View 1 (cartoon, helix red, strand yellow):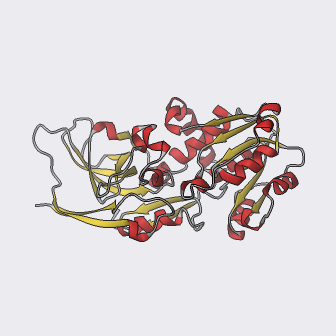
View 2 (tube, helix red, strand yellow):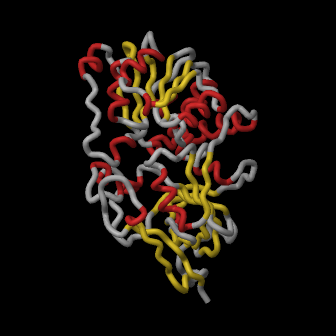
View 3 (cartoon, rainbow, N blue to C red):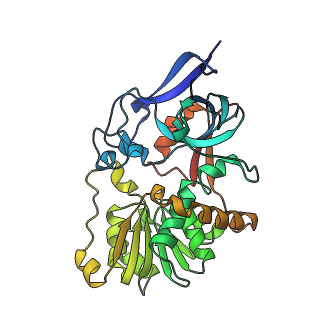
Length: 347
């Protein structure tokens, strides 16, 4: 006796902003909740699903990212979409995983997933914090913020830090980590509500609504009259150009994402390379998966901050597989704040 299993697919590969018609909810009837004898399959009931902007590059007809790593490979029309998920083991042919184990890994945008051991990144043994934290502040979002600031930019106390998309899942943590480390922090966001959140709730020294600024280079000069030491880039495009123009000598730029360029091929950053050369600016792109060797250190420090109430966790949670497409679309239209997560109905 099986159950029905709803999952999300794209109807076809597409360029440009995502729309509802790009997606389809399918149902696999009579999905079995048991494993065959001798199989090492693991059946996971998905509880919380992460929705992330980088996935749009996998949905395109082509993208430079698709040939970089397996996790960025192109999604084929009708194929279940894989993303970070937290779930509970329903059945297992693998002796390392038992029924009711809480696991995190790369599973499908679905109610249930059939996975192999290599798709599971870790078991979650602690219930000290909500499970959703492991998809955000204790997961890739937090690790990306931590790596970009401390591993790559070698952040120093009292430095001047600028972060774009500062109310997003990574940006809000970048600002908080930098403030806790003793730095001056300014963030950019796309609404008055988000600017207020950054300054009044998250403790940024200042913030501005980039939609209201006609000249981003002049704007950053206003907030950083003596220049920027560290720029944490989540946006690319004109914002990266403006930041480069306002960097100090030996400034460091770390690029975590370029969301302004994901849906518009015409928005390609063209920073002044004379600035890069003569100011001796370091620019480094990265993927957090390259830095799993510091994951334990990152977790220890972040656990301490959370226990002490020094980190605010910003999440937006939608309900049900059916809400995945709209949750994904909102990442690109300016409506999202913090980490976007889908909660399955009966989790």
